Image (cartoon, rainbow, N blue to C red; front, side, top):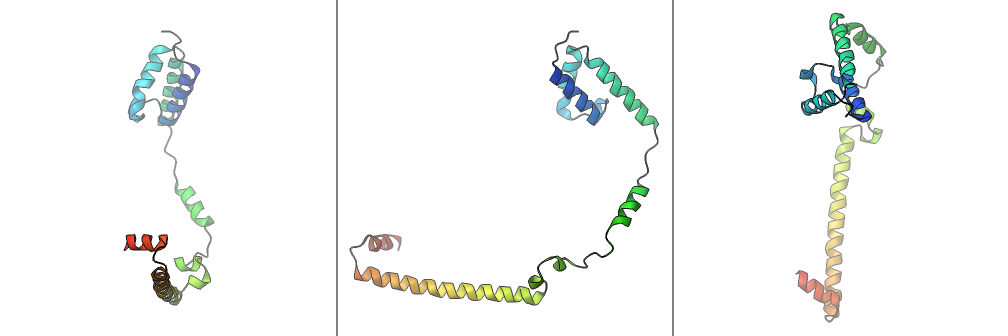
Length: 145
């Protein structure tokens, strides 16, 4: 063996083993070849693997922690007054169904108003074009129609 792996490879190996453990079946699929290359290429990598194997062995002997106390503590710290429904979090204007209906009606009226304004503007444009048939605007509108 030689010291072929660089410092970054050893750091990566240490982080990977710290995250996933020393058992290869826990490692991400693409890591196996890189781990093997580092282990084969640098004698400093073997003690890192051995340390993580010892740590995994120790962790398997410990009892599983109970999360019941943590769960109970979280539930106790939740605020006691929670909103009953979603609309209480939005602005007061939007909090009732009547307000939504009013907004919808206003949007429809807004669209009708500007739709009729648009057709009036189109009529005025056509009158202007009829007066000045040599203009570039007349050519452009004729091309579009």
